Amino acid sequence: MLFQDRREAGSSLARELSSFKGKADLIVLGIPRGGVVVGHEIAKALDAPLDVYITRKIGAPHNPELAIGAVASDGTLLIDHQLVRRLGVSQDYVDQESERQKQEITRRVAEYRGDRPGLELAGKAVILVDDGVATGATTLATVRAIKSQQPSELILAVPVGPQDSIESLRQEVDQLVCLHAPEVFWAVGAFYNVFDQTSDEEVKTLLKAARGRTD
Image (cartoon, rainbow, N blue to C red; front, top):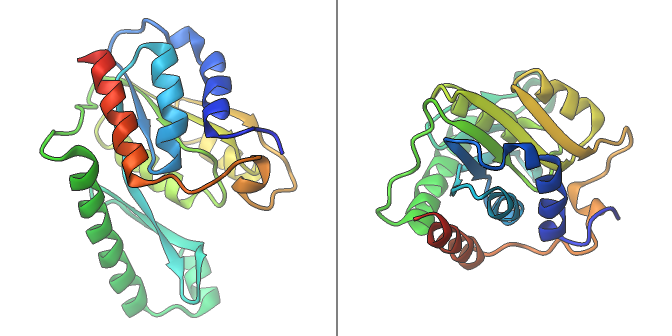
């Protein structure tokens, strides 16, 4: 165990990111659900607005925790073709699961934002936050989708992730802040004392609290 919970992890990351406090055009984006809890602590410490960026993992057949790809809310699709071939996953499965996850993204956007539009990212300094990285597939899809919106700077901030995934992601962003990148890695939750499921209600509450600070 490294962190008590997501809030403590967020506070620890905020200290590493303190140089961004007061920076104009700064936005913090949390990957729901757990990344919003971590991101809320960072946004609060840096006096920055908080929003969600929704990306969904495409899980392998019979093993949904194993990512064979990911899809982002702008439709960016990232597939690990080598893994797909190794597992013998059909194209029909990939297409159907991608579509199912796109529908879930649409549902969550409506759930979390209502009719409020997302924040404009072009020309902004964006800190993208999750509660941890495993394979990095979901995070990579998110990073590439955000980069297509041309932020002035993209910083990835995660409490923990395996060394190989972190080094790979470091090549994709302007700056990466990771508090712990072990060579031996089992699961993100193994590095938290409390890693319970974050609810939609908690995400909405945190986004509302953040709007109250920055509106």
